[in-house]
Image (cartoon, rainbow, N blue to C red; front, side, top):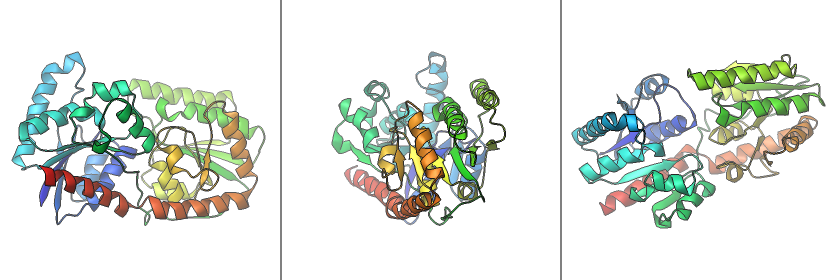
Length: 364
């Protein structure tokens, strides 16, 4: 078996990137590859990997570009290279492109190929800053996220687009109204500025003013940091300001996402990510904005709608239309499930990544 070392964004919580990494390492062909995951901290994700039988190591990887991390990062990079050598690592793959400098260090020391996964929408400046040109292969989750790579001068032959995936057996469809007389709209993800829960509350206020049967679920929790705690407090204060306490429900962190998704009639995402595939697999329409991979994952007018973020009236009006036409909502949800089966299967995702590995290893 060929040992592959993976770098995870974190080990203490599970976000979209962690889910995608788990899908990959737990479904990779174990007769050919042996995955070892390095997490910068311990917690629920690291434990999830261990329970799945994936070798997991905790190794702090301080931010490379911060001046105060100069000594610590050098020590961490040496430890990472030593770990990789001890396990006879033949390829290194980061699930978080901010770890590219660590990849480059190990690649140089061991003379092995390095793969960087782009899960965020970067700028050409960031592409240059994080030395993507030093990577042997770059996997983008959408054509849109590949564009800045090309604009920054990365050889297109070094890039591949592999969309996010979802466990279709776990996320089963539940068509039709989930609550008698109510239409439930959800937003899923960590409570943080990037996910725009405050904007979701503003949209909820506009929708609730025109429809009495709508309810809103904010699924997710804030990380235990000052910035995120403040943002969550601001979200809750906005609910009170708009007097939405009776229609907005804070569901908190859920470990049973398939069941939580089934309780929704519609998913709204104001960022992007694998939650789109999860909602579609569950047979739910999705309203998203032209951010990241969203526009490529949603088939506009078929599996959901891609609506500009500003002004928010467009999203609010689209929600009101679907909430008022349950037949149309169910029909779109059925199309979403079919699209998920054809596009977002774990098997397809893993095979595409393995093909990239095979090509790199044959060259090395």
